[in-house]
Length: 443
Image 1 (cartoon, rainbow, N blue to C red):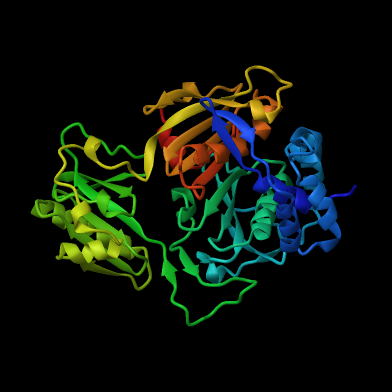
Image 2: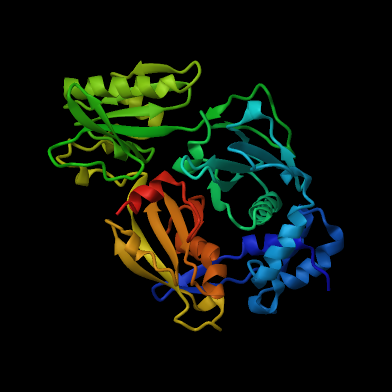
């Protein structure tokens, strides 16, 4: 029975798992009608009956299908051969810069540079970033696949598969990242001056009169007390009036506010700043300076001081009753968008023959993480609250390697975290340019 590689990939992207008894991974079954729907989405009627057969996990164990071998050497060699035949990849990534493609009818189509940073909510995109090391002059690459909030399953599957293919085009050297609309990672956002969401997509068309939605970001501007440091790897320190301030991204919610600090809301072309009732004049000056600094990096952006608490709360979409009283220390702040991290090891209990349903996550560290915690014989998962990092050690078993992505998905599900959380995958021995990861493991 011949199954299209695309449908196999879609099946792999649709598999869901749940962790029980700590972090034990088990498969959830999917009904055959889902297979028929996937076949329709893929517009591949000739494979519909074959897809119905393979997408029946109750009947066929995953380990007995070639889907389980998607990350094997044989599969990588096949994808590399296929990648060399993909016209979109020819000549890309050989010099520093960024390239963007959109998935259109299951094909990879170059996205105009004039539209970099603009994403349709109904589409999926692939982004390749190549960086040159200042000392060695060697190139390192990152491949991101971005999923629109209204993109269809088939398009999501194509983007995921083509991302792996592009990585294999470079012999697996690039780092892979999954990005979802509205939950993009700090690293991905840094690739563009601005991220804008456009209505529609390839299938539904685009209304040029529809308003552009800019990605919103909320920052706290707080004076650092003696001995305090910003606790988020995504934060930075800002100096004003001979004082140090912590500028740190918080979750977009009124519960992130308090009446002792100042806050800056970046809405793209509108940068607003508001200060709590008991904030100092120096903090207010610092917040205005931060707002100006944010606006300078955006074309036609304007800053606006918000005096009324009700007006700022309306921008966030919450209630003034959610605002906290002044807090005494950074430790009392709400969880930042990127926290210090919790580190887990992915293990198959040293049983090389164990299938992926026997994988376990074991917590090995929480906060104050160090490089010595990165076990070369394991796959590591680091949870920073808003982003998930996977690190594959050189000595990790094939089962652990194959189970990395799906374990991350399971982890999000079981811990009631957003399925849209950004996921990064690193490999030991390869350059890691993610600034947040490097800050977490600077020791």
